[in-house]
Image 1 (cartoon, rainbow, N blue to C red):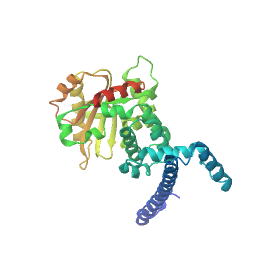
Image 2 (image 1 turned 135 degrees about the horizontal axis):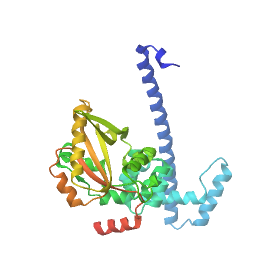
Image 3 (image 1 turned 90 degrees about the horizontal axis):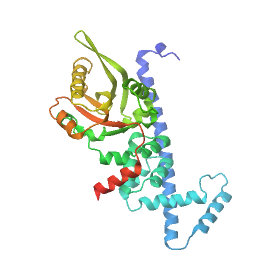
Image 4 (image 1 turned 90 degrees about the vertical axis):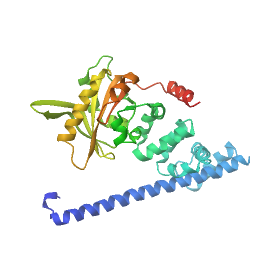
Length: 330
């Protein structure tokens, strides 16, 4: 049906009913998922108690699996290996009651990835909360774990201008000190145009890395100031912060003069592009190397919400990051 033919008085009503249907469908799926996780939790609990009392061993679980399949041939996913995973799932979280509601809000597949790939309970909690918030698919969750998101976040020491902290006190929740763009497949020598084109061609992966609250507005976004034209490399809108976010890309080490250019763009955005109901624009300078002391000096007198982050085009060595993380917190 052509929406233009719908009476405007009825169009809002139709949209409201469609929203009701989609909400109900989502709630139904969520309810099914919660019940499934409850089942696996309870089976894991039952097996764990039997094993702890030395009543059950591996052979009993195999017999249980065969019995279930024989009695209910339509049952799937209750092989002995999966039954042991249910026990592992339960035993992983049984002593952490605050995490029990979280495991019921993500899929069983994502639960499997988290409790099998993550080593510490802190790392598991981090990915549980992120998976719930970001609604990651299996592939997306697998990728962020491989990119050491937990370690990078914990080791992060991102530098903000004083204005950023004043306007957006929770900035650490939305931005990182270090981004990973391994999906670009760039050769050793690349320029800013190639970097920008690669990010645009891999926009879904780029947004996965920076966060799903970002909505893409445009590349080489044109700003007209006086009689001159200027272009922002990448412009986004952040839904939760309700502000424009400008990304400037540099394939060189950070230099103090980069901040002056970024501040100029933010001033132009706030004067000529930002809507009255939106918050002040934020600028992120992405460079391939930086000296944190130089960054801190450069940002100390910046009057705009600006920050400097580093990016790399290869997956970090997770073992090295884990070792650094352990050294820091030990």
